[in-house]
Image (cartoon, rainbow over all chains, first blue to last red):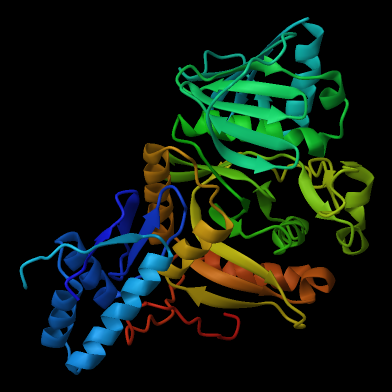
Length: 96
Length: 349
């Protein structure tokens, strides 16, 4: 859970008028659609937040259990990873 | 001879000179070229052909399909089609290479890929980006019809042209930033008609240019529609409505609104031939975002009335061209992080 997911350097993002974000990989052309909550997660990734830290942010902001927050973050990470939009490093980062 | 293609001067040179005339005739048949006598834009696209064997070229393969291969090189791109090739210099707008007799004598549809790729790449360097879309206009309001092959773009374009609409193309337009905002420019000239279309639009058969024996999978014929719908051609428009046609078995055509995010995702998957340099792709995506922000978007569930009562489909779509036509957005569920979008079906406006 102290792994740090980060956007692939070849990804550009677009913010739509309704607040959704679309990350697009310039080499693979893979893209994804993130709603406002997903966009928050992406912004945390850009700040090198750990997966655990992202779960805590979700827990703090929404009325979800810690387990549900953790599971939701994990699912999103897996989705983005399968689209090759993010990379995972195993660096130890300060707990945020 | 000098031509204008979407505001860019185009010329063809060759050694021997006779080959230039042949290539020019081909380009005139395939793209919306107009003879130009003025000085034209600063940027020019020049195709220079000479009888020299192809040299060894190294580069990253960015496209590889039967009949066409593209490599990215230091200067730009190298395109290969059978024994013919064109080397593209993006900075100067020059395409230099050699086209074999077999290539020049092949059906138009078989030659189209090489020229289409070359022009799209060279023009992208000037902020003109290709979109796999048809373009039609009603009362000054531009509509783009975006979708994969077989989605119904040509069928819908013909139905609307029959009902008095103007058209740019059934299949390919260029998007660019004009002085007054985003513009769509006519690019592809002939319509791409499936055999089944001739039953419902018999007027098209008389102007079929020819089918490709090598493209039976697509089963489409090029049709010069200018004589069929005289005076309806339009070289440019400001797109205000984006339509995503889908052929259905329903009796009547109906519309389903899309929000801008859903529209952008569909354009990325069905319409935008994204380019290969980081800067070009970034610029192209920015253009597409501006397009969906400033236009209304709808799925068009095409029914049988497109063939039997095309004027009804025309009346339905004409309503979208009215000033102040409400932009209806489908709801965007935020109950999960994945941001999946669910379309809401609604009756036709």
